[in-house]
Amino acid sequence: MKLPLIIGTGLSGLVGSRITELLQNDFLFEDLSFDTGVDITNQNQVEERIGTSAAPVVLHLAAKADVDGCENDKAQGQEGTAWKVNVKGTENVVTAAQASGKRVIYISTDFVFDGSQESYSETDLPNPVNWYGLTKREGEKITLRYPENCVIRLSYPYTAKNAVKRDFLHSVAGKLAAQQSVQALTDHVFTPTFIDDIATAIKALVEHNASGIYHVVGSESLTPFAAAKKIAQVFGYSAELIKPTTIAEYFSGRANRPYKLALKNAKITSLQVRMHSFTEGLELVKQQGFTL
Image (tube, rainbow, N blue to C red; front, side, top):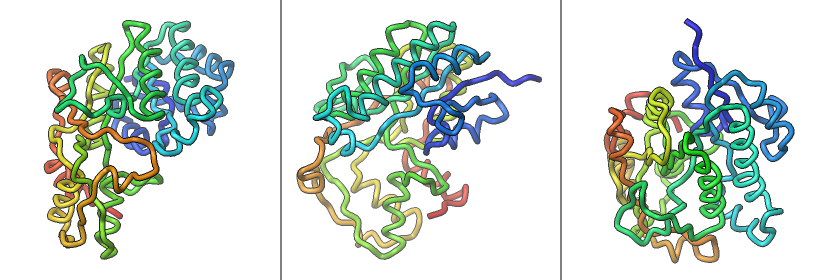
């Protein structure tokens, strides 16, 4: 049987590489990247590749996601890399997809919220507190100009295998394994997400022709301090190395961070997608052969 096509950006990143690995028997992925001669900030290149692809879906993961790096771009406004990649690049992708009859699944972030609420559903209004969040929110708005498109918000994705970009799990576990202290926030709440669940969710969203916004996040929100303690417990590290800190202390002089990012995932789980809790995800990671 011929596999359905998906053309994607950012497929070599932390999330994209695992998604393509897990879904290789479900979809045939076409890579839209520097490696295949495409810069998403180049409108002509994007239009040519997306326009000539037979794929009905564009999975858009590529982004500048370094929060402090994006903040440094803020002074340059629309001439900065963050805006060019996260906003203009997204506009190029969405415009090319629309012109050739394709729908877009855009990967966004919990950082579109300001963190002032106890929890967030898909209907809550974004209000980003840093340049990264603002550029990703602009990307969302561009994507949602067309009702057939879909926005997926992720939060702190993690996986079993070490990658070029280290996730929260590997950053903490790496220090604990080396007997180094870990400064972990006590006044920030996040919703860590097992990347394997993201792959399952994307498969469901494609197959359901889903549109609109979905929070594809884990089923447990907690502080990084509590999360680090769980990592130590599951993998047998010393919890004494984990030291409490606050956003004001840890991120002093850096981009603003939202405080509470407890995202609700009832909408995606209504499609029969299992989103594991952080505790469950750590056990699955351990079973898969966690590597530092």
